Amino acid sequence: MPAPAGLAQTAKVISQLRDEIRRRLEEREAQLAPAAAREATSKGRAQPEPPDPFRLAYQVDRDRIIHSRAFRRLKHKTQVFVWPETDHVVTRMTHTIEVQQVARTIARALNLNEDLAEAIALGHDLGHTPFGHAGEETLAALLPGGFRHNEQSLRIVERLARDGHGLNLTVETREGILKHSKTRESVAAEAWGTASTFEGQIVKLADSVAYLNHDIEDAITAGVITEADLPDRVHRVLGSTHTERIRTLVESAVEASMEAVDRGEGRIELEDGVLAAVDELREFMFQRVYLVESTLEQARYGQRVVRALYEFYERNPDRIDGWSLPADPAWRRAADYVSGMTDGFAIRRATELGLLR
Image (tube, rainbow, N blue to C red; front, side, top):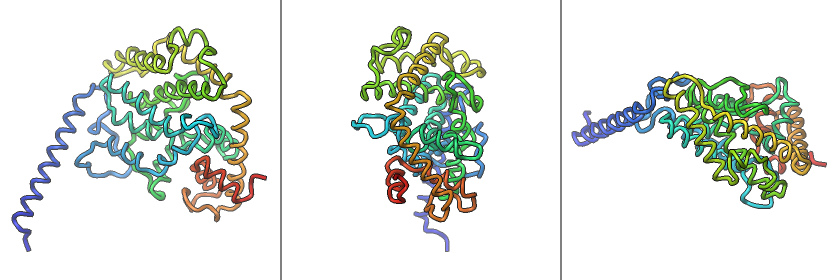
């Protein structure tokens, strides 16, 4: 039986509305810099999907990450300081939001794709273990082939999320997540290669901009350092407040990268003098904050918890009740399950199992 005329007309209007919204979104994206990433030039998804009527591809990526369980757990994962006495210390969630904000600011200033920068920023730390880098280092020593949070972040969006189906993100978002990490040598150092998109390169830099500055605030709050302890060149080049340092780094990234974006080749970078100051600040933070005894004491407890849990679940994979793939070997299932835990859940589970004697 044919549909009533009224329903047919309504369906036609809705279809036309969707087409118009799509056209406007595509036109807006077309106005970005020639070197910007676009849905039209994306390498696509592993599983092809029809276009969303109200969102372009990188908006879809962003929303899938935000609505994932892995993203929600970030609010209860440690950044640097375990068991802080104040609610104002940064968590993995607030760090991620700060990276998102810095990345969007730089991308907008360079007329690049904010949606892609935002998606990569929101997904870059999904694979972090409980107890921050202490947990990561523990699993790295225990697992065949080691463990890195950026590789685990990629594994989550490709394999583990949505009960083993993954999020089916675009190639560009997945690449940016994998390649955001860097070595201790420099914030500009390469470990997994350079992202092919300027937006992915922005997130790599924004990650350092965010964590160095909020870690300074947390360390001052914890009484580990004072503002006056920071190297003279850091104060002279970057500034003497959180706001000044963020502004200096964002402005430097935009000014140093503008020509590369205009040419469509090169990379996102900082001015030489600013980069030198940032690397000096990073080394200072390792020596005076990340590797000092008070911080390491907290880290050692977290490492003990992670090690005990991993060894228990590797021996007893039948006790794993989620966040792993049943067909995987026991070591892989244990690593996925334990790395996905929040700090509090890891402590509770280790206590319930009698592992913290």
